[in-house]
Image 1 (cartoon, rainbow, N blue to C red):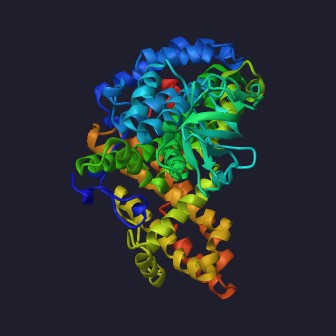
Image 2: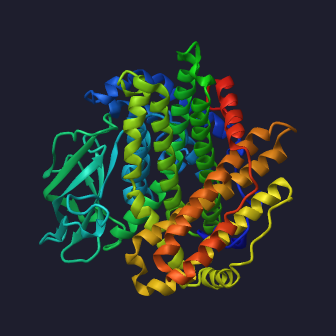
Image 3: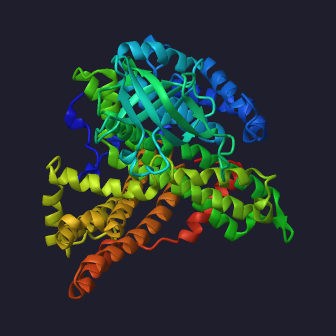
Length: 592
């Protein structure tokens, strides 16, 4: 595989992508579908019948369910066979995460175990550490947790106060400190703990076992949602950590933490798709059953609007997540072909796409929040009752905008990373941005173009709308740009909307080449509605940015240019939404 075949992270803003270069969910093979079916069967048989017991945190139940998943091989999908796993491709792992993502609190526990719990040891551990822990983590004999957050160190993780000091005999690090919001904390046998050695400025990482003397914890936290997930504060009082349990090198902990978070973000993007599809299923089934004014509420236009919007947001998230996952997978495979070892290839293969990971974490978590909120609204008064499934979906969704770095942090991270890569000339961002700014009056015409040519012309105009703002914003704020968080988030929102639209356009175009004539019309409806909304969102975010940095005398011209770049051919989105909803209503489940 040639490196030139792999588009760099963030490079989608300045490059065109062909449909042959992207992956869509409809292309998954039978082996992946079998794994997904196993995940769904497990939820149907073991998790969904026990949701109330899980939410009450029945002693030992969550650990037992995780162990049962281990016996089916579901904890070892990322683990190589020589460590007792069933290593699958990155795309297959993402699809399995989506399938398990509808499991409410259980999905949080299994994602924490298989992701941030297991992967730091798998990717950064030495052979002895991996041999000692990974097979038991893959089988479910041991459970894992990731201990980074502290009471005074949330988003600013490197400001943590947990300390490790080498013992006089040089055999142990003496660990002292406190961690909070630790998922699986109540039963995890193995913990990846981040601490600073002596007066180091950056973190190191250690593998700590729960049974060691000096490890203790508070009672379970009382939470708004994900009530079945074990969340505790953990205390380390003179814990003797063998020197051989340092993970990676001294001072490498912050890098480990950041890289594992990149991976957690893209996986969360897949996980929320499963939750969204389940919430849509409940929404449409209730809408078909509930009767008012002599007919099912699914027949009313206002409900059809809500159902269609749920589908559009979910479909767009899915399109973007699997597009990015394919790029990441290609990057990992290229690194391995160059002789880069397994752990480094996987972790750096994802880190190269930190921009996409951050954007999709935000887009997906906010899509799920929208979907479950509308699900409650469709249920009406019953939606506010804890007896309905949408109550749990609504409460459990909210944490995703905080998990893996808040959405605000991820918005800032995405655009900051993009600009820094441009300044390092990893790709010629600023040169292209200057050209876009100089030629901002030049807008691609979209009237009269064939369907997909029109859509790609819109996408090119949207890319230009972002690029043309970068020089002016950079010049206006200079080195203080990082302090202008509102403007940074404006750019990030534009970038995120663009990526979702381009990904969905590519997917729909590819679907048309795969399907029989006539099958694709509903997907054009989804794309039309999404295009209509993306253009409005980009117009708003761009306008907010312009009035924040441009002199008054330039604002009118820039906003006029932006309006031209956000132009489109009018589409009857009301009828498009109705067609989407009617297909959903007929199938009585998510069917796109």
